[in-house]
Image (cartoon, rainbow, N blue to C red; front, side, top):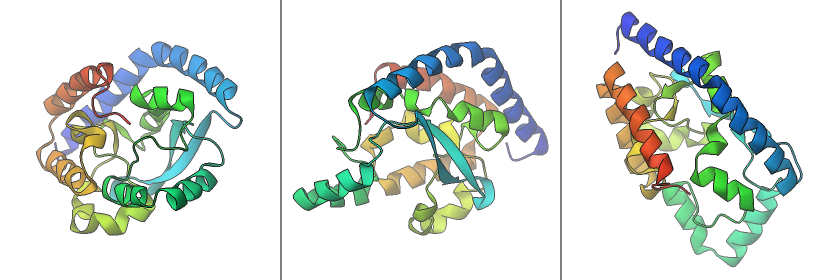
Length: 207
C-alpha cells in the first residue's frame, strides 16, 4: 500500500466508515460525555500531543477516563507502591491505575474512550487502522523503529490492538507496529477493523 493509489483507497475507506458510522458514534458520544461529567469534575474530552506521520505532532482526542489531578494521584501511588513504576516503564500502562475514574475504567475496557479520535480520522491526522499513536516522549524509546513506524498515520485500531493490546510489553508493541507498516494492504485494514469488533466485545487485553 505504498503507492499513491493505495493511500487514496485507504483514505476513502476511512471517510466512508466515518460518514456511515457517524450517527451511531454521535449517539454513544453524547451519552458518554454526560456520564463523564456526572462521574467526576472536569472536561469530558481532552487532547494530548501525539506523533503523527513523519513525526508531526497533532492533538489526539479522547474521552477523559482519569481524575483531573491524576499526576498528583500517581505520584502518591508510586511512593506507596514503587514496584508499579517498573511495571509502567515496561508496559507503558498500569493495572488498576489509581488515576482512572469508575466510569473511566468502563470506557477503557470497551474502547469507548477512543471514539473522539474519529474526528482525528476525519481531519486526516489519523487513520482507522495504523500503528498506535505514540507520545512525543516515547520517541527516544522507539529507537530504530521510529523511522519505519512514522512513515504512516497512526490508527484508532491496528495490528497491536487486535493481537494483545495491554498484554504485550512496549518492545513487542513496536515490533507489531513495524510488521504492520511493512506488510499493510487495504484488505488487511478491513480484516483488522472486523477483528477489532470481536476484541472490543470480549474486552481482550483491555486495561
